[in-house]
Image (cartoon, rainbow, N blue to C red; front, top):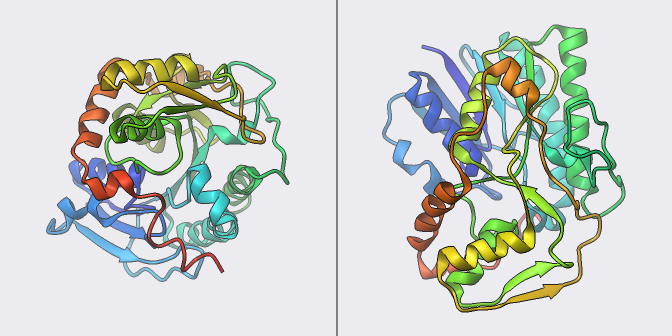
Length: 327
């Protein structure tokens, strides 16, 4: 039985990865310090004999007994609300946390996959974005703490592969959605749906001409699983190239939710990327992967999940555990 360590396991993507590796017959060690994670995302696995949870901050030393086959590093604040409020922790999990986990991979002779992001491209001057594009990132801007943490994460991962021979994989994740997203995490899909469910106007920043490409979570997890098991060590984009403007997306959400609220406009945030569309030629060629779930189908499933949340979840403004980390 393969033993897998998944960090950020109580988060949106981490919890879905736990499900996938349990389904594949692996023993899953789930690690999370619950700054932005939620134990409800993995409570259905609590009694599974092939699953264990460890409450730990990967930015601190990791001591893990037993053999380990795979490490999937998904621990990180991943939305603007998170990393703008806890910038130091965001930088630490991408740097110190990655360093600790690469050291663990080296010691255990484990293969390690890191979750990078389309944010390494910044506000891109190349469209769609290929893996060869170096990006247009402001390292001292408000988003720099996340963007540069991920860029450093890629660099140290490649260094461990090159100089220590650690088997590594790098996935660059584009906008992903689905059940278990935090409704209050600041990203556009849960923000729009949350506003619709609360009867609020939908907030579009700028004129809404900026674009995003949304990938359903099941498709993303499949791509990550295939990348882990291939022999390609350089970054690979995983996302859905079906691009849409934020304004048109807001209109889709209004139609989906049946809200009678209107769209209002606010100033565009600093360094907000104007375009996001992955070039997935590498994923198609190397992994035989491309997204299968269309946006209409995925949004319907996601909306049903959000409708099932409690009123407390709908009205929650920020995560309860933030304050102890903002020091």
